[in-house]
Length: 585
Image (tube, rainbow, N blue to C red; front, side, top):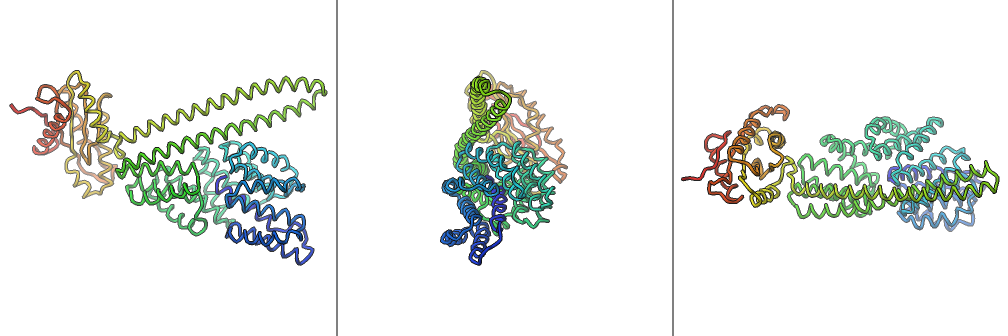
């Protein structure tokens, strides 16, 4: 169950649990009602106090009315769920649910059972409890109980990634809110729609609903719900590349979480997003601070998906800091966690499909029994059941093959991404120095003809940083990289060797070809329009070219050194020119 849904659901339970369902016959009964209401409030505001209050109530069980007994056990189940004691929560509900006959309470205990099984990873049992709740739903007249039931179903379906089905129930809840004119239910339903659409990747739809959802929750004085919705909006800002605006909003929201709920998973997600925002804006110290906080909170809460995401973010931060060993460790951790997430997703999908097919099978059986006599129904049902079992088996195999295929594809993609990250300069997306040198050494070893190396260095680059700022300098490096790449052959490798220095390795290339390429790149750099950076200034670069072609050069190191000498000759001759290394006679 996602945190925002858990909070909404728990709040609804407490609303009814704190309200007497019958007249208070005695003073003692009134005192018990007051204690139950107090415990309901404490579950959200001070869980440790709620346990004490429920312990006091346990000593008064002999004086409970039937309604008070039901409310007491509901609060105990909710408290165990809030503490993460889901096994004990399920055992408690199973011990009392058979004695519950009133639909209003029966459906609430089923919702607790469904939530508990979901958190224990017993998804088939969770779905069975949810289906039992849906069968009781038409019998209810209490709007709050209907909302609780729909919300519990949404929680289960979201956890199983069945977002289309979850959205159907969110729409039903919105219809209830409209019919009952309940602002709290309206807030809950819109919040569900926003979150589900973000989860299913429909960001535009989520953004379209988000302003109305926040407005409705603010009007209903649901401050914590508004905080969660604003958190979703802030994370979306950062995911969309609006880092500066996202950073400002995130810092304010984290302060609100520190006052309302420091253990919230949404606070952890917000810290991870803020870390990425600082990473993309170049503040690696703050990026590491928030990224590490998010990773440690996710790890403490055993939130596997959050652990995977925060580990990937920390890997990127460490790589940007140049701490490649630490980066690799985080990437390896993220890959292990990703495999666990995929395994869990496979388990969820299989559970969902099994229960879905079982439900369809039962419906088909009922239709046959209504239409045919008992003998024909038994014969046809046996035949149909065999066929359906075969279809189910085939479907399960297809689902397994499909999910395993996706897992394998993602694992390969992840492996390729890790390899690319280890070989690529983060700013310019050119090859990094280590990969460039490795590639060039191999090209020289395997050569059957000439191999050329071009080095070039941006002229007066320090002046650009000093005058216009490092952000403009980063823009220049990216613009130059993109420009140079358009002039290269597929076999050429372009790399950033450090700072504003770049290199090109050209296998099977003559000195004349390398000289022509260097000239084209030099002229292209000089023609770059710098206005998009926010400043207008001129750009130029100095080039040095060296080729293994009889100039006394025999390997990559000698050729690289020769190209470097030619580059410095270009600098000495006034910059913005190309020089070719020639062995002194």
